[in-house]
Length: 299
Image 1 (cartoon, helix red, strand yellow):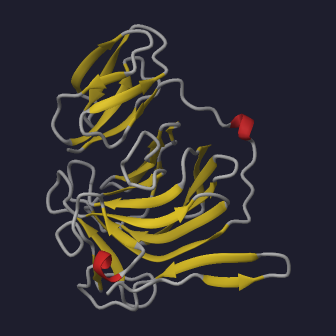
Image 2 (image 1 turned 60 degrees about the horizontal axis):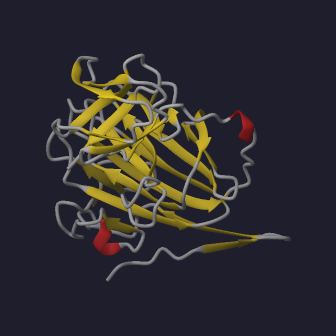
């Protein structure tokens, strides 16, 4: 029977703040989290208690003795693929957790804006990649963040503030602001997928997850500019919807070493392309480099 993480109500003079917290200390090592906790489900199409599910581990912990282990079985990623249910449709929310990527490994997760994960173009609001060298970057329909880095083999903090009323969100990594961007859809879930950088095994640990009403005001709406070129969904099963194709040009698919894998001529206003390439992680965008960002192909 799944354990419920009950909301904790913190009453102030004029308002109440609801939150949930999860440190994985109430579970035993080896427990499948989608079986035990109502907070987590397999990615649609997966099965709780199977290879899709993640397990509680005593390998590392930022507090206590337990954390949640996300581990791929191959460099290509998967099959472990879970969603943590945030389930917010309005308001201003703060979600943070601690994360550890061991030396020699890489990591990936994304923020979902649709209530059924992967169900539409608003699904992937943000993808976050950590390379085996500690480099990290975030991208989404809004564009790509500046490169940053995390300390491999050490715990670091990830934080999102999502203001659904304004349609804005911001991400921090260990207190460093990574980006602020437009947000579409609900704050539905976080997808922790066992995907790496295409060269090393995706492996990471999660601990001390907290969701609370946010007191951070995201301002400067007029300063948040979307990239003129965009595509979705990301990850994709092979077909991409395009936006901002303002001229006839070539779109390029590059491997992570910058080598050309595929060249796709497109016309002004073209709204979709099909990618006949193997599953993996690529760079995708116009030949001139504007809007070039990471693309995950996953079937």
